[in-house]
Length: 329
View 1 (cartoon, rainbow, N blue to C red):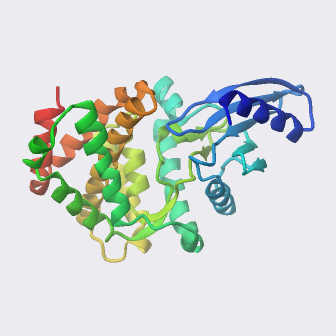
View 2 (view 1 turned 120 degrees about the horizontal axis):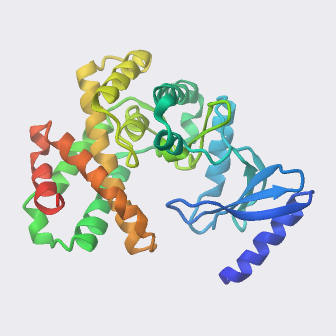
View 3 (view 1 turned 90 degrees about the vertical axis):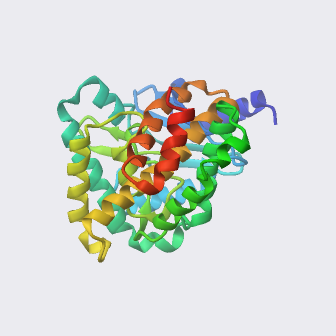
């Protein structure tokens, strides 16, 4: 089906699904996926979000399933108004357009409060999500390795034009294995898997809602915390990050079994390495495959996280050397 035909079908479906007069349909946001979002405004000024989510690229059934799981936990997520899964059309409730990142960059007066609430949301997902574990795909070693390989192909080869012979000097795949081996030993919990400031909505009462949760998995307990505190889109003071890690560690003692605080911090750090290698690869893929060039601007912050954490651990020194030699300009 041509895109123009799909657009006509999508608009017709929206009009048939909403039993009210529509006054406006306008782009709502964009993200790093194949989905497109539109804000629908009715004549009474109520709004909804229409999502065009091509089923050949996006797992819409999983989106519906995870939305229900999170709703059952009492977490604010968009409610499903209507869906047509054959074509990948959805209408969902509108949580608003004020992301946590928007709030933080415009006025940091409430930043500590926002992060306190966000960390509490992670704890709530982990503690309340136990019953959903059987419904979640396992975030296993193979998946983690595949994600880190995105860094090699899309960033090192396509963006930086580094050849295989040069990369072999740094034994990157051995380091990737080391990182993944440690990550899979962490306690397994409900993981949102993209829990950062752009995917958290702040409503008019300063309450938090979450978006982009369809890739949730059963995975390492530090994953969502590192996504939030070492965010690819905003840098937090290190003292603030350390305080939040310590607070989370003590709050999660029931899930952490015999993990010491020192071990937890190392788990957090190495999980961050895995996530940020993946992120750099995805940002590069968005440029080279999807022509979304703006994401390349987020690489320097993410790369700096990688260098800073690698420098803490002797076992990651080769990765640090590689990053400094080839990417730190």
